[in-house]
Image 1 (cartoon, rainbow, N blue to C red):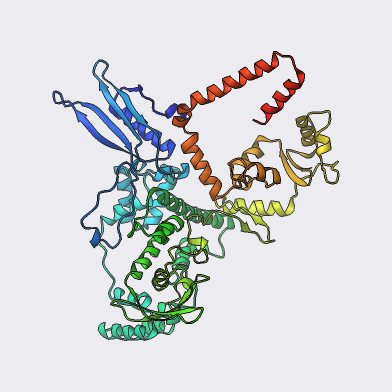
Image 2: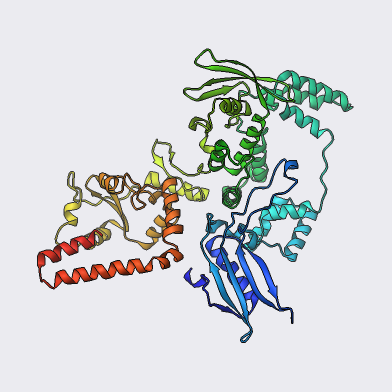
Length: 592
C-alpha cells in the first residue's frame, strides 16, 4: 500500500501515466476518482498542469427545478479535499507532482465493492456488442449479466455493473403500459378502505369492454390476498403480492425437477445465492457512496432517520414525513391517559384514528402502517410533531430496516448465540454444521479444578514448548483451560488462516473481565471494547485521525522526544548499578 501512495516530487513520463497511477491509488484506498481542470500552453497547446480529484470533491449546485422533482437524486459529494496536482517540467518533458492531499472527510469503500466505483466502470464496445447479440437472441438481461460475469471470472472483473447494463438496454427500447395496467394497480395499492376499492373495481370493469370476465372474476374472489385495503392485518413489510416468491421460483424453476442431480441443483442454488449477496454488496456500496437528501435539513427526526435507516427505507420514511406536513388534526380527545386523534390528509379522502400515550411515547394508527410495513405512518408522525416528540422512539425502529441490520448475533437451533458468516456458500455451511455435530475438539489432559492448565504453563518449561508438546499429542487444534475459561489453541497456519479470514467474525470479539472494564474505562478503549458499532466507529476515528500517514508524520517529533527522554532516564538509573531499580524499570516498560 505504501508503494502506491503519491508523494510530492514524483515524476511521470506522460500525463496518462499519472492518471492511471491516481486511479490505481483510489482503487486500493477505496475512493472513486475523476479529472479536474487542465491548463494548456497558449504557444503549443500542450497541457502544462492538471489536477486529479476524489470524486466527492465539491458540492452539488442547487437546481432551480428541484421543487418540480418528486424523487431528487441522492447526494454523492461531500466537498472532499483529496487531490493530486502535476505540472510539466519543460527541461525533461515529464510531469511532476507538486501538490497532494490525502485526508478524506468521508468513509472509504470496502475492498469487495471497489469495482462498483464510477471510475472503475466502463463498458467496452466488444461487451456492448455481446450484450446486443444475447438480448436479440432472447436471453434475459439477468442471465446475460450472469453469463458475462462468468466469462470475465466474476462480477468484480467485468468492468460494469448490472445497473450499467440495464441503463444501456433501456436506451434501446421503449416501454409502454400494458392495456389497463394502471387502473388495475390502483385497485391493488391505492385505496385504503374497501368501499373505495369496490367502486374503483366496478368502474374499471365498465371502462374497459372485456368479453371474457372469467379471469378477472377469479382474481376478484381472491382480493383478500392481493388488495391493499384487505391486507391490513397481514405483516407484508412492503412486499407486493408474491414478488419474492416469483423471483425465487424464476431463478430455480429449471432446477426443481425430480430426476435432477442434487449436485447440479446445489451448484445452481449457490449461484442464485451469490447473486443475492452481490445485490447486498451493491446496497452496502450505495449506502457508503451516497448521502440521502433531506427535504428539511434542520429536522432532528429526519437527521436521525437518515443515520439509522438504510437509504431505501429512509426514502420511504421521508415520503411519509412529507405527507405528515399535509396532515390536519380534525378532532382530539386528551382527557384520558391515552390521547385520541382524528387525522385527515388534505385533498385525500379518509379519516384515521391515532391513539398515543405521550408519557410512554407509544402510538398506534388505524392505517396499521407500522404493523404491516415496519415504519411509522404520516398520521402518527403528525401526532408526534404536535406533541413536540422530535426523535423516533427506539420501539418504532425495526433493526431489519437499519444500516446495522447485518451486524450482531443470532440464535442457533439450540438457543446459543452465534455470529453467522453470510458469505459462506451453502455447501460450506452444510459441511460445517455436519462437522460441528459429529466432531468435538480434543481437550488436553491434566487440568486441575479452578486453575485448569495454568500449573503446566507456569512450570520450568517455556509455555510455547508445553503447547508444542500438546499439539504433537492432540493435533493442530485443541482446547485447554485457563482458569475457568476454555481456550482454543491453534498450531497450524492453515487453521490460523481460517480463523482470521473465513471465520474472522467469530474471533473478532474480546472477552469481558473486571480488569479491562476498569483499565479500559468500561470498555471504551479500542483495545478492550467488544466488537460492534462502537468499536468500528472508534477504529475508523483512530485510522483517519490518529494513525493516518499524515498524522503519523505530523506527530513524529513527539514520539522521538518521548523515546529519547525514556532512554536517557533509563541510562541514568542503570549507571547507578541498582538491581532493584533495574527490575522496576523492566516492569515499568512491560506495562507502558
